[in-house]
Amino acid sequence: MRYVSTRGQAPVLSFEEAMLTGLARDGGLYLPEAIPHMAPAEIAALAGLSYEEAAFRVMRPYIGDAFTDAEFEAIIARAYAGFTHAARAPLVQLGPNHHLLELFHGPTLAFKDFAMQLIGQLFEAALKRNGKRVCIVGATSGDTGSAAIEAFRGLEAVDVFILYPQGRVSEVQRRQMSTPAEDNVHALAVEGHFDDCQARVKDMFNDFEFRDAVGLAGVNSINWARVLAQVVYYFTSAVSLGAPHREVSFTVPTGNFGDIFAGYIAKRMGLPIARLVVATNQNDILHRCLSNAEYRPDGVIPSISPSMDIQVSSNFERALFEAYGRDGSAVAQLMEELKAGGFTVSQGALQTLQENFDSGRCDENQTRAAIRRTWDTTGELLCPHSAIGVHVAEEHMVPVVPMITLATAHPAKFPAAVEEASGQHPPLPSHMADLYERSERITEVENDLGAIETLIKERTAH
Image (cartoon, rainbow, N blue to C red; front, side, top):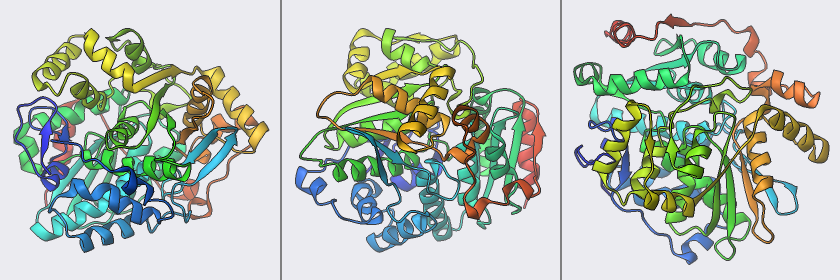
């Protein structure tokens, strides 16, 4: 299995190389040269398996010879051992034909744990084998950072630096990043918003002298292994509702497009997905683009769903690569236009995108109403992001085809917003009950590439 860049100018890599590299040297994102296909019988055979067994079968074709079967099985087992629900990703029925996929039973209470716990184990195994050390730098709008720090804290061959927008994540999200005591993890508070943090990370990857000097690696959803891990729960949830013998649809609250792109990969692999619905908050650039072909950032508006307060969706580049017939030069041109203010998707590419994705938006009042309504009618307490998914899903329901909405985070990660909307205060799970009492370690840093690189060099000098 070989991996190619969305911009067509970077070296073709193996799985392990693509995983450890993160962002391609031409600025693009890696994708497999070909998408493996699962026959209906293979999909049906996932029924009744443990999550770990299903994960092995879905992901194995992408790994190539990076790990033996036994090694990969052990990596998967370690990755999900810390999840608190035996099903790992259980389904809850919200109403006729509508199901909620709970993805918040991992150690940091967010869907990012499915990918980050796995990638942490993959990195550790690969680095032990080749004797290398890497410096992981990531940007977060809240959940990726805490999941990355949890996955890599204390590992000998890894330093982790997470950039987050100061004052624009929830207190729980901030504390999950700032309270781990291990010396190899660093929470960096950046003045600005998520897109600023993400831009500085990409700048670091494009500074090849710095990149090579510190052994830079990325675990944002720019990393293919992150997307791959998320493909699994599309299969497990769909099979539990009758796939491949019946179609299912999914609604995904998303800002960076990684989670829903994993659904697209599942569909390409043969999972009978009727519709993939993009659910956005008031920062609705994805909904606007899928509706009218215009991708033009117009500023981030802070919301009660901060993990979706994004205007530059990195993984949308992967969808564009597919929509433009895997023409790397066309994608590179679009990304240059984005630097100048935005771009217009061609009619043919837009048609391809619309054949695969529906979309909808949900404003602040609708988000609160969805939290309140779902609590009143089902007793299920939703985080604001999951509530956006539920609202948009209800607009796209059709008879017969089951709709699965992804619940991306535990409501306790956003207690103020949830309590305001529902009157219910969501308590933290017992393993995190003392979070507000733990001491924090935060480094404030200006939104300046040189300052950030200098800080990282100083802290990685071993």
